[in-house]
Amino acid sequence: MNYEKIANEIKNKVGGEENIKAVTHCATRLRINVKDSEKVDFDSIKKISGVVDAVYSNGQVQVVIGTDVPKVYDAFMEIYDVSNSNQSTDEEVTKNKQSAFSKLIDFIASSFTPILPAIIGGGLLKGIIAIFVAFNVLSIKSIDYQVLSFIADASFQFLPVLLAYTSAKKLKANPYIAVTLAGVLMSSSFGMLINQHAKIVLFGLPIRPVNYASSVIPILLIVYVQSKIEKYLNKVFPATVGMFLTPTISIFVNAILGLVILGPLGSYIGDYLGMAIGYLNQNIPWLAPTILGAFSPLIVMMGMHYSLFPIALQSISRFGYDSFFTPAGLVSNIAQAGAGFAVAVKTKDKKMKSTAFSTSITALLGVTEPVLYGVNLKLKKPLYAAIVGGAIGGLYAGITFVTSTAMASPGILALALFAKTIKNLINAIIAMLIAFLVSFLLGSLLLKDDDKSKKHVQDEKNELSVSSVTDGQIVYLSRVNDKAFSSEQMGKGIAFISKKGDVYAPTSGEISLVFPTKHAYGIKTPENIELLIHLGINTVELKGKYFESFVTQGQTVKQGQKIAHFNLDKISQAGYDPTIMLIVTEPQGLVPQVCVADNQEVTKSDKVINLIQG
Image 1 (cartoon, rainbow, N blue to C red):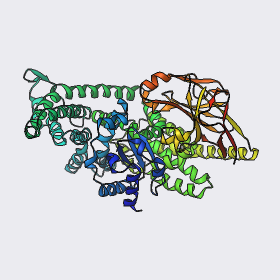
Image 2 (image 1 turned 180 degrees about the horizontal axis):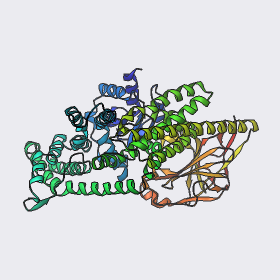
Image 3 (image 1 turned 30 degrees about the horizontal axis):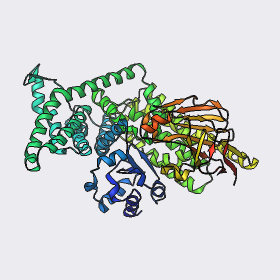
Image 4 (image 1 turned 60 degrees about the horizontal axis):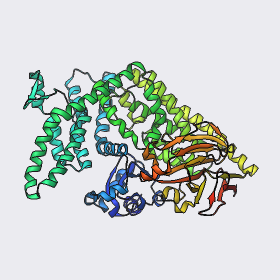
């Protein structure tokens, strides 16, 4: 594989050097922050040899590559030094709107992604040590055990230092001052004061005696405030004076704020988070592993799994184990593999068979993006099987209270994390087997039914007409201001400018999807043809504001039945395009043909798309 060629093609397709703000990577994805997402050619990126998929999430272009991503990243950094492109103007930020929640997720992701190798490495070492202890190869009273333990614990104990550096880099604060502030929290002198004095004060201000080792939230709060203070100081002081005064004031002010306000605030948040985790562990231990086991693929697709890192690390810091994030990730990843192997066995497409087999093996090792994007999501039904398998495997893991001693990319190689006791390890293996078998068997059944339904559609040569979803004006997809739709990478279809914001079912069928933010709906016809109705562009950021839904998932509707309403004026005033997209995402072998003219006025009863035998 020519990594330099792949990196160069990706760089060009994201809009070139001038459009790049920052580049990082995780276990399987190259993550590129861009100034203008409209300049990114997602369709061309997906066609690059070596690229599995490309998505835009939380302000990042995420190029799914697989386990070779570190080599592509290194090649990317060789051909282009992004350090000079990390500044963006206010205009560029406005152009690339992000909700507060998206910014938070992006901040957490950027802070944790670079330190994952240290966390994973330390975690696996802890697991291996636990195996040696469980089989009496190593005694917990020996010097060997004590030395190995503090080696394995180092990345967790000094987590505030690691996070100080990465979060400061993300927020464009001075990373070395941030590390110094982490050192203040973890100073041995501060620890001595805690042990010697019941009450610690500075200039009359109380300092809460807290052990900040392994903590997450306090240092993130401190570095956030540091970035704001340094930005202000850099504006106030000229460069010649600022090089002395800015670091001095920054360390002094932020250290006091950290010890007196921000550190204690973060520790209180951590305490309450720990109490919530403790409550779940004691009363409903099966709940979190079941939910996360089922929906981890969707959480990963949205890039929201990073938001769970602080919770999992808080659990490890407080209780010495993680009872939901890593156990749920284990069963979810194995379920993805099981569904992928079902495709490898059932499909007659040689290319898909090869892809499914190879990516399923990587999923067994804990890397699921290739099988998720390249197989299960593409075929949909294997993804449904993986969700069910992950849920059942997670339920067993929760009932038997499977825990891990650290965080890692969970797969069969990470079983060492579950070896604290033989019983815990056995239950983890059973949960894996349940997730794999359920996903494999259900995936095989669903794919068999799918083949039958496709054959039925082709044999009967069914034709289907799809009506308008609103009263308004036709817009051809090529004119829609969103490349995901205008390039037809989501599927063929048509768009509308609504008059009143009322949205109707374009055909009879079952509501297969109601997005939580009420801006997107899926309909599945009796012929298994699937349609997507998307209300507005980037309106997911409104989190359901100005949208009203009249249907629920699983409900049967008739053509012309009102399913939603959205406030056109409010959405436009908020800066969003209210264009409605109607996409045929699964035509079942039929060919969608638009049967109306661009700019034509239509009502909900007018036919706009015919699906005919190709």
